[in-house]
Amino acid sequence: MENQLTILAESLEKKIKVLEQIQEYNKRQEQVFTAEQVDMGDFDEAVEEKGRLIERLTRLDEGFESLYAGLAKQLEGNRERYAEEIRGLQRQISVITEMSVAIQVQEKRNKQLVEQFFAKERAGIRQNRKVSKAAYDYYKKVNNTSYTPPQFYDNKQ
Image (cartoon, rainbow, N blue to C red; front, side):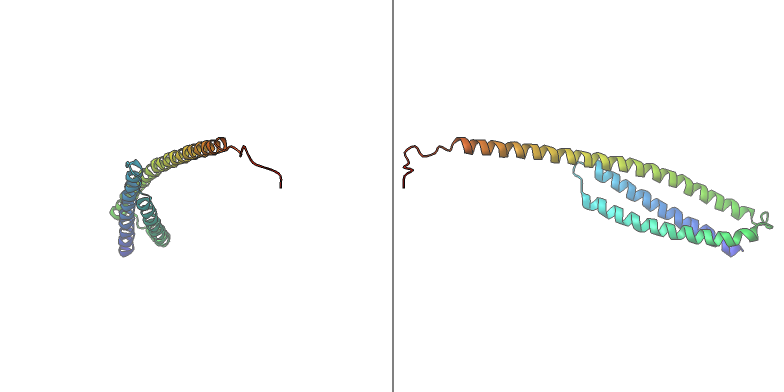
């Protein structure tokens, strides 16, 4: 049983490390959209790596839950014997919960930055379309007004 508790603690430690990496990628995403020049390549790379980390996190969660489900029954009668290990697991779970909340806040802030960026880009595209249309209309008017049909043209054949 001590071996299983150690495996649970190691699993939680791995989860903490993965959450730290996710926080770092969230910081990178924030830097991308707060920079003067947005590099979508960096953003895409961070999103892909975060996707892989989230998959890893899911696997760790599933492994932890399956191991804990089998271990919980054995711990019912021996809680005092493994009290220190259980407190250690509870501390790790508390850290994980705090990190998860912090990540959710980062994600929300990044989502707002992305929405602002794309709103600004759409506004720029609309403005470019207006300018292009105005230039095209001007071009058409100038070309049509300078056209004078022939004055001395014999229409007879």
